[in-house]
Image 1 (cartoon, helix red, strand yellow):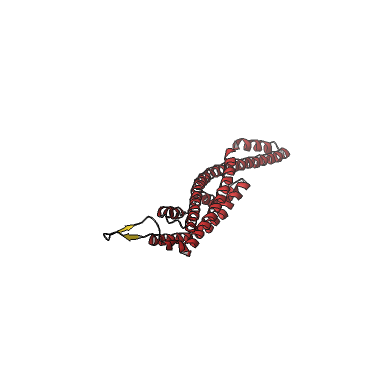
Image 2: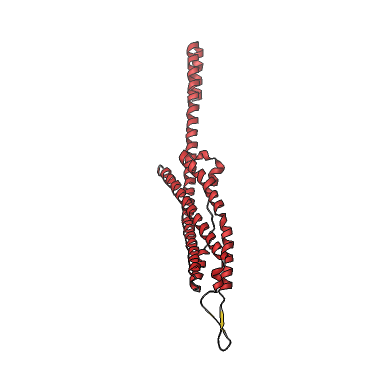
Length: 246
């Protein structure tokens, strides 16, 4: 092809057709420029396709992780509700002075249900490392950054109070163990235990304070987890909408 164009130029010069030669030369330059632009456009289109393939792949991974986390957050939410109800039941038993050991034991067991707040962020961090511009949807990009850079870590910070709650549960359980040891001597001198509590358990003000603390902490945790579940659900809806476009 190059030899063909070169031959045309040579013929024009030999025939002394200078004006036609210049016109041809300009036309040739234009063709070369057009060729370069087409090549650049094709290359750009290929890069866009590669970026889109990567974006879809990572969005699918993020979606999987959010689904897992939402399921886990729902489980934690149920645990906080159980713990809150258990603390309230213990308070009721103390107010009513019901000394049944099994009832108190169940209440303490329920409110001792702790949680460990964790979430996945590997796929999000991968996207973050290569640049958020890989996410073409502005609304989705904002929703993901808000979820992972604010809401999820903020929830972790708010739920850190459970460390104090765990200490309170330990203290309640210790008092419970001590104050539930009741023994009476039979005629033969043997000690038998009774299925109830010492009255001092119901007059210990610290137990009620701890139970109230556990109840309120778990109530707050429940609503915080509900909020994060709702936000995760909204992000999943945006992800589903974006992925359906493919």
